[in-house]
Image 1 (cartoon, rainbow, N blue to C red):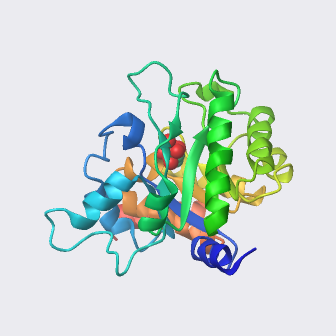
Image 2: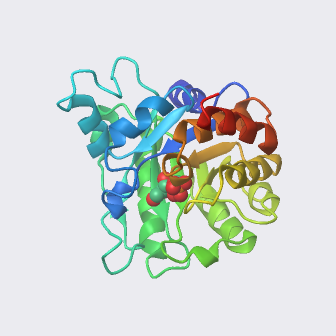
Image 3: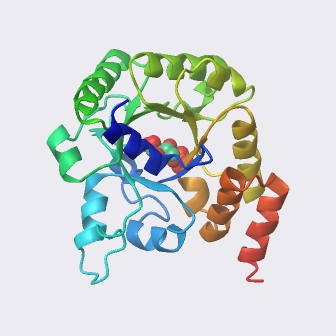
Length: 272
Ligand code: 5RP
């Protein structure tokens, strides 16, 4: 692997081999989804807990330039950026799977993205299209040493999230050359990680009832081979996003158990 790609990966994956990516790209198909109406405000208190931000170029530029005199994501002192580079669909449109590449390689380089992320919809009518977008992106990014995170997306079909389907998706994305794969947690998660030759990070999905549930499935996924998370709604839609972020940081980087993470969460939430 070339120095540039190694350098980028080392900014994303910490010396302990783990990573905590904050996903805030949802507006690209959900619009101003609940609690993400002002992405810049949302991330401010979370910045110290996370290792990288997953977002679109629109939000990146808006939070940098904006009317605000102090940029939230400062170009001088930024967390690494993983740029969401697929889209073209919406929650009110025909089919969420009908995505294409939205960002050129020149733009990816101009924004100095540390990595990029693109969704593939395996088993959908747009399987071929999204997989070929992935390979096109990988071909372009490999030239410049930019890591590509494949996102195994299910659209509205959340019931697809089982080990058999997700291991198929992760393996295909890795075979096509993805540097890392983001997928959902499921029962028997080791079946997904053990058959995937590249690192796997866990996505959150719709909000859980409690923070403890989040700590439990992330802890379980990491015990079964995931290297970290790319999580959104279960952090910023919680009543205490700082508490969830700090608890997750403890699970991911400090070997905390779900109970220890939840104690930390409760302490922060109750302002103790
Ligand atoms: C949305 C995404 C998100 O980045 C990913 O699903 C993680 O966010 P969440 O934890 O809210 O599911 O790819 O398209």
